[in-house]
Length: 111
Image (cartoon, rainbow, N blue to C red):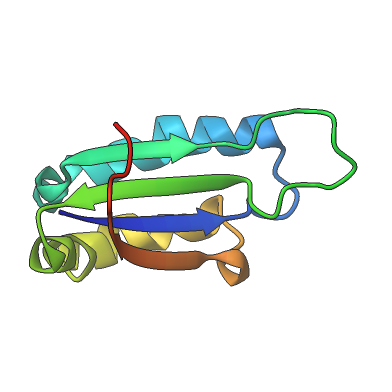
């Protein structure tokens, strides 16, 4: 099993609430409407907690998506549906210059 981790900041001028609502109510339904998204085994969105700190978080969200293997991940991200229906929507809520992507293989130490 592999996992892709994608971290990013929200589009400039968008509040945290607008960003989270858009991600949940508009973008997620776009993604999960395409058949290739059925290859995702688990999908988690994480947001920074509001806690006492003088330092602002580097990212506004982190997405984790698990796949059986790299080929299944590529079937999603390299599909025509993703390229034409999902990817163009990213500009509506993400600062594309902030995106960091890491494909990983997990080593579970404690469960």
